[in-house]
Length: 418
Image 1 (cartoon, rainbow, N blue to C red):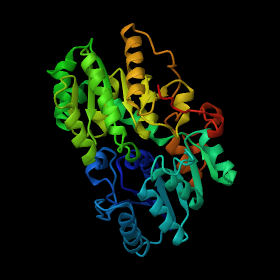
Image 2 (cartoon, rainbow, N blue to C red):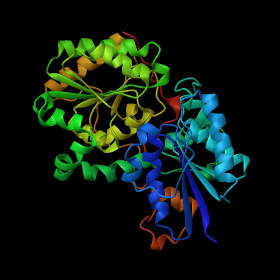
Image 3 (cartoon, rainbow, N blue to C red):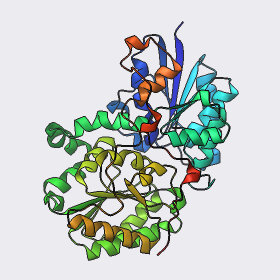
Image 4 (spheres, rainbow, N blue to C red):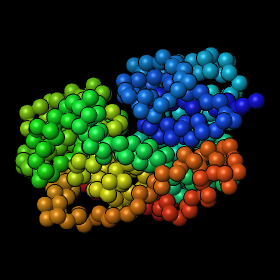
């Protein structure tokens, strides 16, 4: 009898990172596959299900309008009633550190179903930064049968916590698999002329007839949404960008605004009269990858962007006080600058000075993406469901030393306030 594999997801990053595993599982005739959508970020999943051809989906229909406790309670009950009471599940895949992933792992554990954790071992060891993600991923690690680590450093974190080495595998990050697949599309002339106008008319107009059609102007991507940054970080970061934009009229900031009402309201308040800050609705995945290729650098507090942007070999300024992805900082692909206004202004101005001279900033180094080679999903499926390697396109496991990982204790990425 075919084994039943269930993939449980609810947010945009989860879909992007779990889809390559789903596509790899689909190639296996000995498996049945079920997708479960929780609804945690329903509005942000626009187009992703079709883009990655996800099928056999159960929609739990939970709307994340409540607080974390209420959402978790609804999710646990719904997963039990609509999935585990209805099907004999052999394996559950969860991805990352979302509230969906943590509760899905918990329900699977309660039902004695093994859990495979994609993107395991990331740590800041600060329970409230990022919140609630840091605690979510630590709890998942306690329940996971397999932990698939994006880097050697992530695996070392797990081993330090007592996780069995035989159950932790360095695979690379599936986000690289997804990005490389989609980037082949967004670099094509057909995508730019025919598809982009449909997927993001506002972004298309900026580059077709707007100020960004001037190739010589410098362009920056801005994203900002993290829960722990919203209290004081919004004012500090947004006022810094206003000052930088007013002083540097030749620099254009493209800001796809998160659906979080506080972020959206603040962005409108700060930037509506700044001509070279362009506020856009949230971008779906392909337009965002297209934008990666158009900009010269990025300012962001996004964890996912820290994994994706290294593919572009362009500078990234991280708007956070710490990061669970230290590899990009260590390799010189990104710089951790915090959210204090003076820091943001100083680091951005220094970067602009270098770019105007056609130079890289002093800290930037071109390096291979530390998060993988595009084959992570193959390694993940092969670990859970081994097949004859001679019949597989995957000839050997990844060399962990190629994924530049560091033990968190060996790094000191403390943002100094100027």
